[in-house]
Length: 134
Image (cartoon, rainbow, N blue to C red; front, side, top):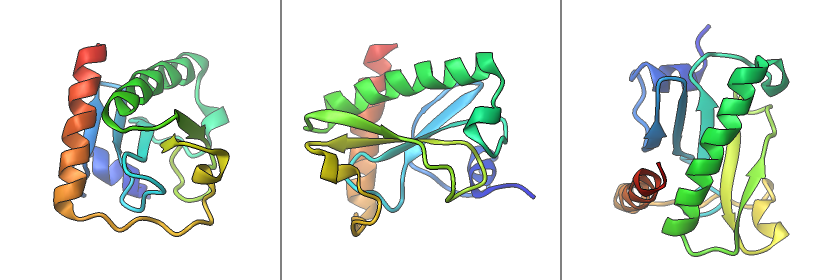
């Protein structure tokens, strides 16, 4: 059964895509901890991140690094935090979250409710930052 992320890749479910190439996709989390909270995934459907073949795994992290730099350009923050939880969706993914302190990456915190206009503006800012890093 295809994961929700596979449906996003296939275009069956809309997403705020900030970066994409032939192997990886980055899109805004629809229940973000912070404005700019982005998910980075391999397009190949693999449930557990440590089951990813080495070359694809390394590429995923290099892609995430470029996305994180774009987030840092677009969203005022001290750092872009990284988390891999792996329980929410059965498709390997990396959370990139703009943070100013360790408490900002606490997944038990209430999620933001951003409008479509806010999500669109954030998406465009990160896209612009990504295109200037590649």
